[in-house]
Length: 104
Image 1 (cartoon, one colour):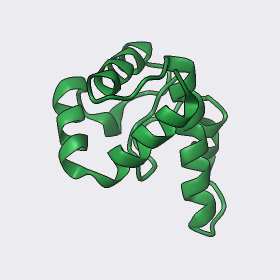
Image 2 (cartoon, helix red, strand yellow):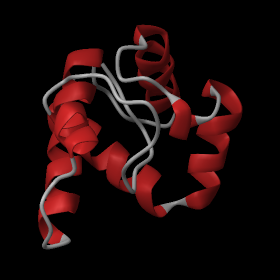
Image 3 (cartoon, one colour):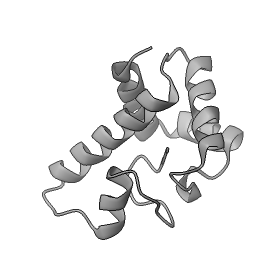
């Protein structure tokens, strides 16, 4: 298991609309997931495993936060309060980032 595998997975989900659609069909609307939803995190790890990625929920959470921070930093803007809460592990009401995937 590795955080690098999780990071690679999120990058693919971010750039591959077919895989993102398949994930949504299996796990539900990924743009409306609360970061505290552990069931979704479990489904995410299973889906990723089925597609050749090997990481656990903690590595997924760490990688997601890193990918989100990198995307927002590269956009050259400050984080909104909701985005800061997601990065810090807090709750958010709806999707806020390009990956549209939130884990706890």
